[in-house]
Amino acid sequence: MNQQFAPKTFEPALHASADTVAVAVAEGDGIGPEIMQATLRVLRAAGARITPVPVQLGRAVYEAGTASGVSPEAWDILRETGVLLKGPITTPQGTGAKSVNVTLRKSLGLFANIRPCTAFAPYVATKHPGMDVVIVRENEEDLYAGIEHRQTDEVYQCLKLVSRPATERIIRYAFEYARAHGRRKVSCFSKDNIMKMTDGLFHRVFEEVAAEYPEIAHDHWIIDIGAARLAADPGRFDVIVTGNLYGDIISDIAAEVAGSVGLGASSNIGENGAMFEAIHGSAPDIAGQGKANPSGLLLAAVQMLEHLGQGDVAATIRNAWLATIEAGIHTADIYKREISCELVSTQGFADAVIARLGREPYALTPARTGAPVTAPTIPQIVRRRPAAKELVGIDVFVHAADVDVDSLADKLLIASRCQPVAVTMISNRGVKVWPQAQVQTLLTDHWRVRFLFTVKANNGLPWQLLHALTLGGVEVIKTEQLYRFDGERGYSLGQGE
Ligand code: NAD
Image 1 (tube, protein in one colour):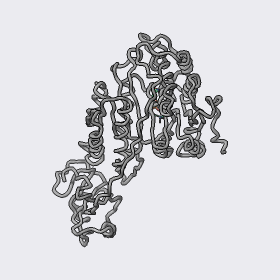
Image 2: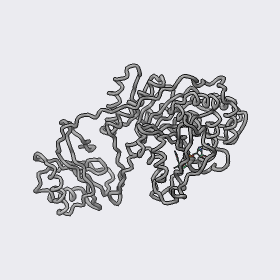
Image 3: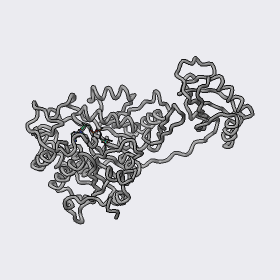
Image 4: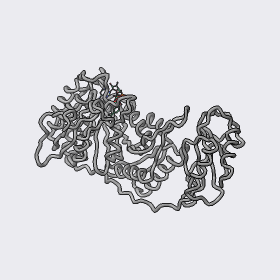
């Protein structure tokens, strides 16, 4: 094994024996080692039936030259254990390094990100004492597909990909989660009034799937007003299912509104693996000072124990944690003179939780002990039959600087004059600017030209057209084929088209 990547040895493995489960443990960067130490101490004291297998992810691996932040040895351990408890990782800025989190979620197929956001009033200050919302976020696609290009001097592009199978799987998972946890309503957040195809698919599939769960109420919110209502009146929400970017943003807001991001835990669930982590980052500003709140990671470990079928230990730890919070024993991030009794360090907080193992909270709702927690079923998706697909045209994206739209149109018409196409539209940043447009928008050097075929198309026609455009001096930077699927238009119209 490459010694550089040799994982550090933690204290003796927890209850290493035939009836423990091996769990990969990455302590992470910044405050990661402190909060992981505190978490593992509580797990050990509570009798968690796990054997931690240390893996190294993040800074040291980046610095050793692996851009993914995950060493080959770590991949082997992750594939073998299938479960990872992960401390926060510092993502290096501007070095070409990829986020470990995004890499792990995608490579291990961890399609669902579950973030419960619960208030612990009056023991943790919050504007919404009754808040109890779970956010189910799609974890693999959307703008996080990581497909970005600079196309011209002035324009950069990030592709938003939304697929029917992934959408159906996350939405079914949200309903299965609601069913398994006795929750009553699932709300969908999307922006389908603007992104009619991608977010439109998300909303449509939500309505289809919701019809199969008549015992669970459902509603849909446009993300902007939904997010505003979530911040102002979270009591109207129960489970929220949404896309990757929206989910990322609203879950941090929801955790903060509930009390503190320092308390937020999340699980990342897939068919062949699961990863559990706090929602906060590596907090370099307080690293090494013993100030960090280990609760986010500890509560993530509680979710991990439930996932592993150790609901008994999970409930014991959660109840001890609730009793500690209720006793006013708080780390600096949630300490308030009016409501807290004792300001403790990271390890001091872990000691207080350990001292309360076996106790239940007096006022906060205790976790159920004894009753097994049923993990939501991972939905199996039945692929649909492929639609009849007909090629009807092509959008050609063109780089042209310092040009007026009529001269550009003339150039395109001349270059394509012998091709079986009609130029139906030129748009700039999505707004139709030719023909007959009131051009008051800012024009950039990035144009989209819509060609519709005037004959029944074959797959060779687009290439023939592109060849003709290139010979005519047009700088093509990208194309998108235009299809009809079972007769339905598979592309959006330009604004004003
Ligand atoms: P951050 O969450 O690390 O810190 C934001 C603020 O919250 C800071 O003031 C910090 O002191 C405080 N804070 C965070 N966790 C706390 C805790 N447990 N106890 C007390 N206070 C806490 O966010 P950031 O500063 O934007 O990011 C720092 C680094 O973490 C970046 O490199 C970022 O990429 C990375 N990050 C990693 C993850 C992850 O690994 N899952 C998530 C988010 C950010």
